[in-house]
Length: 108
Image (cartoon, rainbow, N blue to C red; front, top):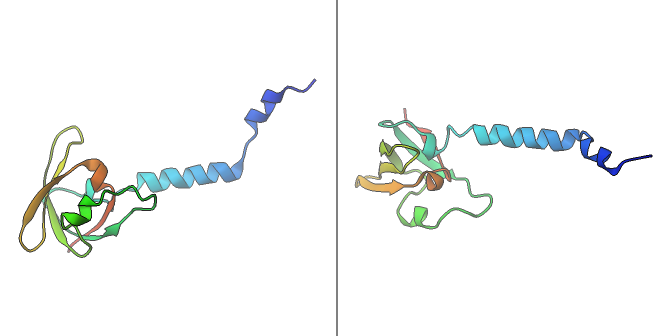
């Protein structure tokens, strides 16, 4: 007699490799604003908005590509980031969820 629940244990290599790639990409967040070190200068390179979830206020506040910035402070327990950016030294607070959309690189 065959039991239908045996099909639940079938091993699918394609699905596993896709999950592994997703986890590796998700773990590598060093190029995001949310993981950038404090008191170091960086430059905004672009946005990661593949699923169209990025809030428009990020662009409206002036966080545009090729803008220089510095993280001044981050509140405890993954709180908001206090960011200084631009030539005018504007300062804003960004939630960590919003900072994950911004791709950055350090300035040397």
